[in-house]
Every structure is written in C-alpha cells, then in structure tokens.
Image 1 (spheres, one colour):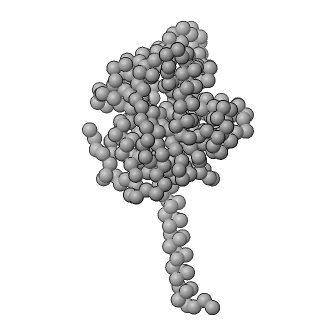
Image 2 (image 1 turned 45 degrees about the vertical axis):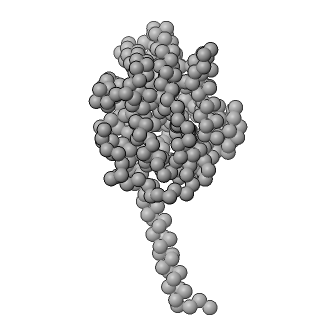
Length: 329
C-alpha cells in the first residue's frame, strides 16, 4: 500500500526529472541560437562558385583540403592517404555510424562506406552544391544533411567523428578570442554528446602560426572566406579540456604548401576553361588566394593541424565557463 509520504516523494522526483529534461532541451536550443560560425550564405559564397570550376583544379575525388604527402605521390594518392589517415585515427573502420562534419563533395563519405566497411556515413554541409552532388551518388550507406553542426541532433550516437577543413568556419573574424573559444567549446560539447562512450574524433584545420591576427591579409577574410577566422592551437586545447583527450597532434604545414601549389598549377593550366565557367574576376581572385596560401604555409604564418582525440566518458569537471576562457593575446 502506497503511503501519503511515498506519493509526495514520487511527485517531487517527477517534478525534478521534468525540470532536468526541460533544462536539457533549453541548453540544446541555446547552442543552436548561439552558433558563432559562418552563415550558410557565407559558406555558399565560396563553395557554390561552380562544381565544374572546382573539378578543373582539384583531384578526381573532389577533395578540397590539405593532402598528406609522401615523396612519389600525385595529388589523388596524397588526398586518399589523408582521408585514410583520418579514418584510421578516428577508429572508424568497420563502424556502424560515422559523422563527417563539413563533408565537402563527399570523398570521405565514399571512402568510409566503399573501402572501410562503414555501414552508415552521415555528412554535414551548408553548401547546396555539395549536398546535391553527394545526393547524386544515390548510395544507401551515405546520407548528406544541409545543416550546421549546431542544428544536428542524431537519433542515436556515432561510433566516430571526422572533421576536415571545416573548423576554420566555426568562428567569425569579428569575435573576441573569448567568444571564439566559447563557440569552439560548444562545438566540442556537441561532438561529445553525439559520440558513443569510448568514441574517437579526428580533426584537421588550418590555424594561426607565427603571426598576429591583425597582420593577416584582409583579402582572404573579405574575398575568399567571409565570416570565418582561424583558431590557434591553444584555442582548441582549451575548448576540448575535460571532455576530449588529445592523443596525437601533427603540424603538416608543408603538406598544405605542396597542396596549394598543385591546385594553383592546375588552375593556371585550365585558366581559359575556368574563365568560361566563372569569369575572369573569380579566377584572378582564386589564383591570388592560392598563391598567398602557398606563401603562408611556407613561411609558417599558417599551420595545418591534424589532431586525434578520444572522448572522455566521465568528465570530472563542468564545461568551461566564459570567465575561464583564454583572453585576447
């Protein structure tokens, strides 16, 4: 027989459970509303220039990020080596579900399901052209979503997460460093929520090297990648603290120097066709951008980070608060 006291306890417990569920839902909505990264329009400004234009100077896999080079590589073999590296680092081989944040034209998604035995690979992009391209694969194991990481709410957790060349768009250039790192914290917290216990993540991003932000050419931010800013390695370390263990780190900036030079050479070789597709002004702009990237990675003003992380399943500290974040350098 249930006593009056027991009924009161049940009511109180039910109230607290409902309150916690409401708070959890509110936190997710807040994360979505406070995404500090580039808008869909800013992403489409760059990546939706023309699929045929990019195909002129990328490799046959349409991979638009720094390759991983060995001595006798061509561009395609170096790109596939890079993709395989991240798949191995994230422990995604033979996994049931893998998330690719910023999936580009789908080369990593294809590699996951066609060569590494992944059952279901999900890609996120804000580029309509990229999403349509991936949808044209019509592959039952590949799913592409036209949405940001902050809007992504999977029905079940992933075994692994890969993000290559997207993190550069996760903070706007006009943000203070505190706000930038706060946004990065939200990204990694979302990845932590989406990963199953024991899951791994592999991240690749350009980062500031031996340069002050103010000394960077405004051309890149204004003409090539609007609403985007690079992180520093310290930003990533701070944002992952307590929820991801950084297991391995590489700075392969010379690989991006070589990748940029290959892209630049191919674009110049196909200049006439490129002009027919997107116009002289766009081609001149891209030639300047790729030239600056080649110089930047050669001199060390920009780094290329590849970071392997393991999910900390039982964090022993609360997520970072704003007043704990690192301040402007």
